[in-house]
Image (cartoon, rainbow, N blue to C red; front, side, top):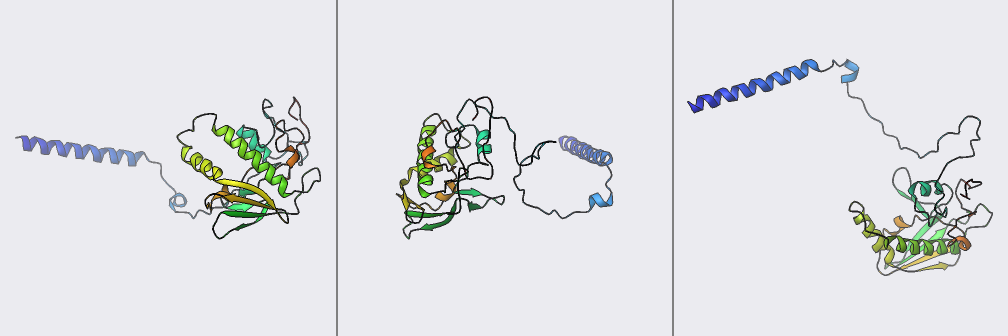
Amino acid sequence: MKTKKAKIKSILVLLSALLLTVTSLACSPAQSPEESTPRETVESPVQPTLPPPEKGQSDSTLYTAVPVSSSLHPLFNKDETVRALLRLVYEPLFDRGADGRLKGLLAKGLRTSEDGLTLTLTLDRDKSFHNGQRLTAEDVRASMLAWLDRTVEEDGEGQLSPVSSVTELYRQTSLSNILAVETGPSETLIIRLQEADPYLPALLTFPVVPAADARNREGRGIAGTGSWILSAGTGGGF
C-alpha cells in the first residue's frame, strides 16, 4: 500500500514539473532568427578619457570641484577622487596601460643586478616640469622617500580591511624590503633591497614632484610633468 502511494506521489511530482516547464516555455517571448543566431563579440581596449568640454568652454581646460579640506599635494592627499584627478598633472615612474600591463612613464629603462638586490632605473631625460625645470634623479629620490614616509604613517593609522589585507600586506612587506634609494650617474635612480623582489616596479606608481616640494604638504603651486596643469582655483584650493 505504501509503495503504491509513493508511486502515485512520484507521478504527481513529475507531472507538476512538466506543467511548470510547459508554462514557462509558453510565456517566453518569441525570438527572431537574428536574435537566436550567435554573434561574434569583438573586444576592444577601453582607453581612459576625460569628459568633453561643455558648450562655450575650451577643450584645453578642465573644470572640476574637489574637497579643499585636505592638501592638494599628490603625495599626501588621501582622497581617492582627488588623487585620480592629480594623476593627470603628476606622473609616476610606472603605470598600467589599458591592457593592464606595466609601462614606464618617467622611467625609460630598468636594470636588475644578477642577485636581484639592486635595481637601476633610467629616467626619461626629455621630461621637464611645467615650470621648465628638467626632471632629475634627485626629484624622483626625494618624491620616493616622502612617499615611503607617508605610507608608513598611513599604515599606522588603523586596521586593514579584510578585503585588501592580502594586497596591503604584500605592499608593506615589499616597501619595508627597501634598504636605500640613491641617485646614480647619468640621472639614474638606484634602489637597494634586502631580498630580491621582481615585482617591486609594479608598486613604484607614486607621483613625482620637484625635490624642493617633495615635503611641502600644502601642495600649492607644485609643478608636475603630466599633460595637464593646475592653473587656478577658488575657495582656497590652490
